[in-house]
Image 1 (cartoon, rainbow, N blue to C red):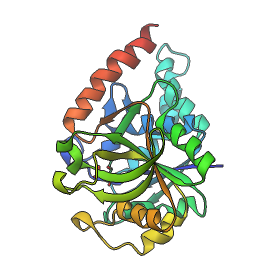
Image 2: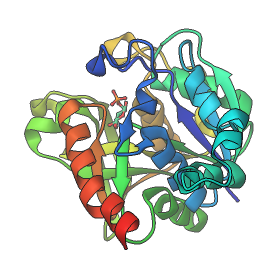
Image 3: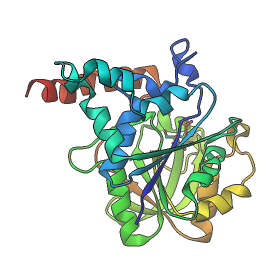
Image 4: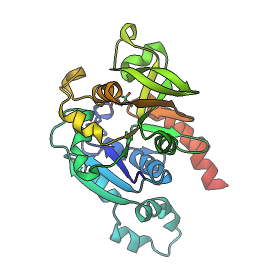
Length: 278
Ligand code: G1P
C-alpha cells in the first residue's frame, strides 16, 4: 500500500518574479485555488493521504495553508461566505501533513533525498505542483499507483512533446510492453533536440520505490550542477526496472507564464464555471 506523497516545494519560481519574491510559487492561484492544492487533491484522490512537503526558506505560507485558520473560520462561520472554504476544509480533513526543509537548492534529486526523513522505507508518490494535470476520470497519480500495484516497479508519467520542446524535460527511451507502458532503457535530463533519445517527456508525477534514496546518495551532480532525479532513475532502470506511462489526461506547465495562463483559462471555463453554476 502506498500512503505517502512527496511534494518538493522549495524552488524559487524565478520565472514568476516579482510575484514570487515573497510568496511561494506553489501558492500562485489558478482561478481560486493555489497550484499546490490541485496537486494535493490529486494525491488524496489516489488515496495517498500522508502529504510530505519538502519546503525551504520563504515557504511558510504553504504550511499555514494546510492548517486551520481559526480567525478566518470564526469570521466566516454561519455566513454566506462559508462555501468558499469548503474545498480546503475537505483537503485538511482528508490529509495528514508533515514538513521538512531543504536548506540548499541542489536539485530535484537532492530535494527527494531530503524528504527521505518523512517517507522512510516505503514506496511513495511524487508530485511537482508546477505541472497541473486535468483528467477525465482518474487523476494521473491514481493511474500511476494502479500500475505500481500491479508491477511493484517505480513508474513515471510521460507525454509526447514537440521536438523543439524536449530540452525543457527529462526524456526517456523505452520498450513498449503494453499500450502506453514502457520499460525504460535510457533517460536524459533536458537534452538538446539532437541528443534526445525520443520525444517522450517526463512530467512531474512519479511513484518511486525507496531504493531511489540509496541511489540518490551516490548520484553526483549532473545537468546544471544539480543532483538530478532523472540520473538516479536511469541507474535504477539499469539495475532493476523503471516503467514510464503515457498518462491519460492533459498537463499544463504552470512553471511557465504561457502554461499558467493557458491552465487558468482552461480551469476557469471547464471546471470553475461548471462547478459554480451547475
Ligand atoms: C523536472 C525534472 C524533469 C521533468 C520536469 C517535469 O524539471 O527534472 O525531468 O521533465 O520536472 O515538469 P524542472 O521542470 O523542475 O526543471
